[in-house]
Amino acid sequence: MRLYSVSDITKAVQEALREKGFGTITSEGYGVVHAQQSAGIVSQSFRIRIETAKPDDK
Image (cartoon, rainbow, N blue to C red; front, side):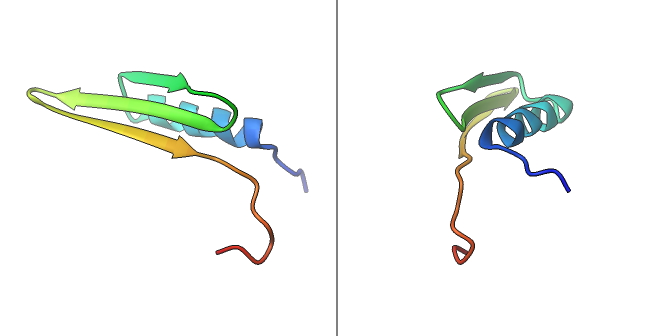
């Protein structure tokens, strides 16, 4: 089984957001993705942080 790094997961999240049609996807640093989408007069902005957690973190 391959172990994935924060960079691997960040890239996968960016690719998934592109597939879903998000217009703007940027990296704001290590493990942080900023995504924006808009439809007409409505727009949304998301900041997604990917970080390593301890095994007992939920």
